[in-house]
Each structure stands twice: as structure tokens, then as C-alpha cells.
Length: 234
Image (cartoon, rainbow, N blue to C red; front, side, top):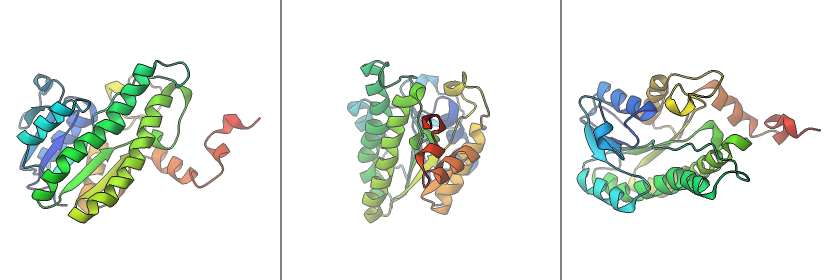
């Protein structure tokens, strides 16, 4: 897909990776970029079209699709991170993770799929995570939701192929954003991640692995699980 002249919509575009996506799309010559957020007044990026969108609210999603009927590229970026474990975390927080990353991505894609089809097919980019493939107690709810979103992305790719809509999955480890501000260790620049992901969209790739962490964990899926979870070895 050629991003030059495309009309893009980015969810969660008010900060972090979403804001970098919106900026990168403008730099690459997108004709229009809808910057979607629950609070569109928080959008401060010049050149974009602010749009109210809460991915957990069906009415909000329908209104956004009606307002942005010219979209040819959908970037499902909106996220949440409650830090909930599965046994000790609140069910409400765990449900929020699934509502945001799985049901939210599904609902937005379902609403915009006919829009993309009318506009020639276009593309969908789903922001996933290395935690789609690996988990730990302190990120268990988030990881479970991202894993579900990975399966969702693969299924949507098959279903949307008939209308010539390509679907690309982005996997990345920790980025230098507010969501990971309390994480120790290496963090990749979200502007770099946005660039790599959009390269993947333009090249028609199914997956973009944005860092060594994602590449190493992806490769580790073919081995014994003790390679990914050495603490299980007694």
C-alpha cells in the first residue's frame, strides 16, 4: 500500500506511539490523518483531524466511522496497561485489558471494514506486542489480551483478504513512552517503531518485528517452553 495520498485513522493518537504514527503518516504524505482519542481536545499535533473515539464504546465507534468515511488505512493502536495479574488483579482491570485490546480492536475493524472496502481495500495495522507471545505475572492481563489480539489479527487477515484489505501486525517490546515509564531496561524510540511499522504496511508484510526482543521471543516459540520460561526449571 502506498501511504502517499492515503487517508489514515490512528486510534489512541493523543500520545505515545499513536502520536508518532500520526506524525509519521503526515511526513510520508498521507492526504489526511484522523487522530482519534477519547478526548479529542488532547490532540496537539498540527495538521491532523482530531476525532472522538473510545474503542470500548460501540456508539462512539459507529459515530467515528460515519465521520471518517474516506479512510483507507486503519491503525489500531489504542491500548491500556493496568499491571494486573490474573490471580491477584481485579476482574474489572482484567476485563478492561480484553475490552481494549481484543474487543476494541475487533469492534473498530468491523465498523471500518466496509469503509475500507468502498475505498478500494486499503490496509489495517494492529499494534500488538512481544507480550503476545510471552507473559509474566505482573503483565498477565495485558499479555493475555495481546495474545488474543494476535489470534484476532491472523483471523482478520484471512477474512479481509476477499475485499483486498491487507492486515499487518506490529510486535515490539518496551518503548520509551508513558506506558513503560516505570520499566527498567532498554526501550526503543516509538518514532523508530512507527517508521518500521509503516514500512511494513507499504511493503505488504504480514508481520513487523520492531526490535531484537520481539525477534528473539518469536524465534523461541519453536523451542521448548523452558527456553522462554527458565524459572520453571527446578
